[in-house]
Amino acid sequence: MQLIIREIIAKSILTKSGIPGADYCINPYIGCFHGCRYCYATFMKKYTNHEELWGSFVDVKMNAPEILRRQLKRAVKGTIIISSVTDAYQPVEGRYKLTRRCLEELLSYQFPVGILTKSPLVLRDMDIIKKFRDIEVGITITTNDERIRKIFEPKAPPVEARIQTLKRLHENGIRTYVFIGPVLPMNPEALCGKIKPYVDYVFIDRMNYVSKTVNIYNQLKLQKWLERNFVDEVKRRLRRGFDKKKVTFCNK
Ligand code: SF4
Image 1 (spheres, rainbow, N blue to C red):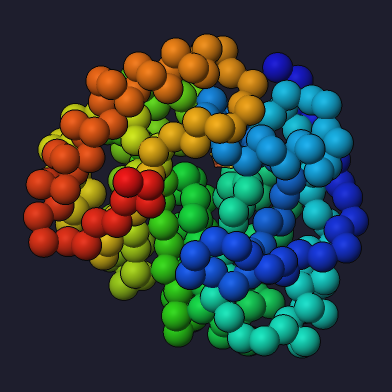
Image 2 (spheres, helix red, strand yellow):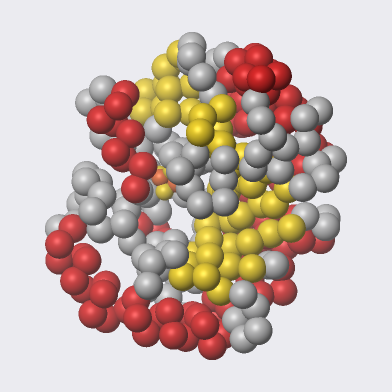
């Protein structure tokens, strides 16, 4: 698959968020080279007029830090999510460092920040992250089974790399959570055992079936198959496995 990178000038970077618990979100990129099969963010194509397949393009908001600096001067203090419709630490971040530069801007304002990623690249910014008074980092881990990960998230980092990232964050005193969403086929007890020592809490979510994701699978069959065979049982076992830790199911 040919990967397309475009450098663009954005009008806004700090946008109001409809996500519970978040006032704003920051997405330094449009699109995501992780290209997960189930990605809910493919709806973005409707607004950005991209015709390419999701996962094959990334628009880089070259002026993100500068525009953020301007917007922060006028913004009412609130919680910021980085990021909601892309992965701010996808591979292009290694080259453009937009997420890092946005964090540098945020540091002087000390808005509460939540970062959600699948990538160990977040560790590169540990020096800045440690300077925030109120910050947490979430790592998305959808299965403990590397074979399943390769099917659904073929271009995202391996499961073990994410667990090690979580461990490093925890060891550095950063508040962490794991976002288990969507719940993919897994051994729930094994996953709990691996992540439990390094998380403050977990979020669990099912697959966003209404997504119009362009997928190699038949969405309807995948939905029925998952619901009947995995999701309910996995949720029960996750609840048991995390024992006294707070476990929130986003969709009942
Ligand atoms: S990492 Fe997140 S934003 Fe990127 S393709 Fe996967 S689900 Fe979508």
